[in-house]
Image (cartoon, rainbow, N blue to C red; front, side, top):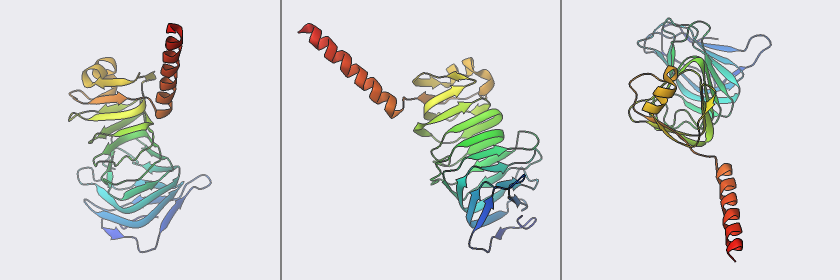
Length: 243
């Protein structure tokens, strides 16, 4: 299924569900022209795929409305010839989303809704995930593959999530992104705050030059509870010895 070619449009049905299939998942192809908006008020991803099927890099299409990710699904940016698009729709649900390209790795998926309640995990295999609006990433884990890229334009805080970076990150505008666990090129960072100078010096291939932000790792609540229990035990032991 596809949207009208080179035109803005609103889906006329009550809802549209993209299911997983045998061999091929069901696909919705964005075919609008420069700056066109495709609105689907109730788009449900249940194993299906959204494809960027037009060629406008400077003025990409926008997908508006409401999107619920019920199970692991895909966003295919297809190729490098301008197949970028913006999701201004409210993003919800708990299924995972994989962003990839059939060819190349430089197209962009822009997230532009500031009230997303999405709790699923992001996996960026190819292409760039650009979170331009506050809270647009939701609250799941984020994994950026070796050919993937990420740029987050707000201070992302999620002490319960893991961030894995094998690709390239833009860290600028004094942004501070906080996670319960951070792994960069198979190296797990200990709890603490790491400024751009440290990150660029130790993981130069993973950060765009000229940054100014920080990454912070804080222990998950369960880990903090264990540390607190251990500390109390040590204090009790020391008190008994003094007696």
